Image (tube, rainbow, N blue to C red):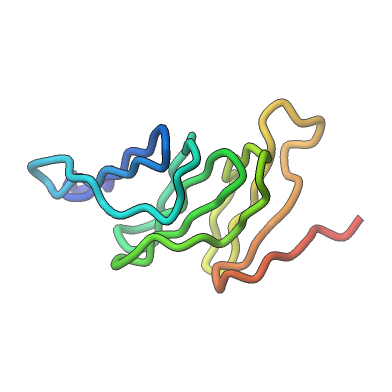
Length: 110
């Protein structure tokens, strides 16, 4: 939910995404059918969701896939203006990678 309570996002099984418009929760088109676990946002037009092998970004109009690695359970950790830093639950290291919001993946130097 944003601070005003006018926008919110819930994610769930089989790629389910619901948006709150200030009054009601409404389903929106999802680019995936995998289970989604987590959602974080900086603004109503800047939200990421993650799940089983996928990280999605909402730009205010559409959800798009910015990271796609089947069978990898992603969890966003930090959002910046240009990147999503992510981890894997129960991983030894809390931050294991990053992907650019322009949908080009990149790796943390080892």
